[in-house]
Image (cartoon, rainbow, N blue to C red; front, top):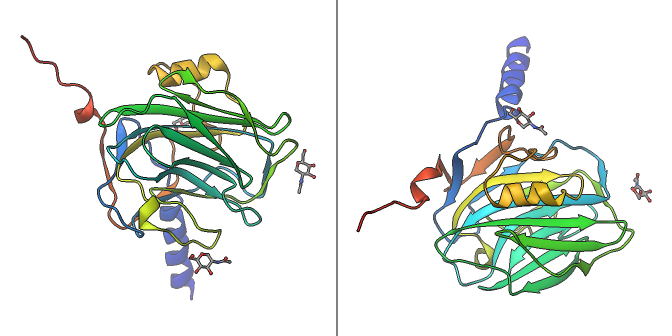
Length: 231
Ligand SMILES: *[C@@H]1O[C@H](CO)[C@@H](O)[C@H](O)[C@H]1NC(C)=O
Ligand SMILES: *[C@@H]1O[C@H](CO)[C@@H](O)[C@H](O)[C@H]1NC(C)=O
Ligand SMILES: *[C@@H]1O[C@H](CO)[C@@H](O)[C@H](O)[C@H]1NC(C)=O
């Protein structure tokens, strides 16, 4: 019995280990409804009244795809960053959604994306490669209450799970951060242009508690940065 307790404790310790993923990315090689990464945020039973999520995505998918899926026990699509198709972005907050058009969306290149939401005003906004969207209103006076489940690579159907291959992400994701506030403009600019920024206090890529499920590879993110050639 004692032995079992020791093993269980060791397992829990290992499972809770955080990794510094600086300079690394998750590669999602296939369309599927099985391959994903779950992220364990620094929160339990939280009650968020503001959110910022930033990430960088590299893909050539023209179809719909989920970039960041956060579910709450009480709310489907509590905070979801989704691409319905090439050139379009959709942000869901507390199940309400808005589409954003005319933002950069380069295929086969890193796109740096930040999504912000302020519950007090209800205003949400996207920034892609430093370019801001229109601010649009979602769920004014709202809040995200409960222990979140966060998934990369798939869109969660509900808090108990369920994925659809048609919404899966194929490509690479890196530098995923989440804050419980609306990030200041200078911080968004620094994130977008590769400068030093204050890491996320809810999800910190330099100290990330996560688990990979199925065919997802963690690798160095450098080889995709442009190769110089003389001529
Ligand atoms: C969460 O925060 C909102 C806004 O501040 C508040 O109205 C609500 O009662 C809070 N919910 C819980 C469960 O603390
Ligand atoms: C969650 O979604 C899955 C897959 O669609 C479904 O099987 C399950 O019944 C859903 N659960 C709830 C509680 O809605
Ligand atoms: C993020 O992780 C790094 C590396 O562990 C740490 O130095 C930094 O303080 C963390 N930042 C926050 C806001 O948690």
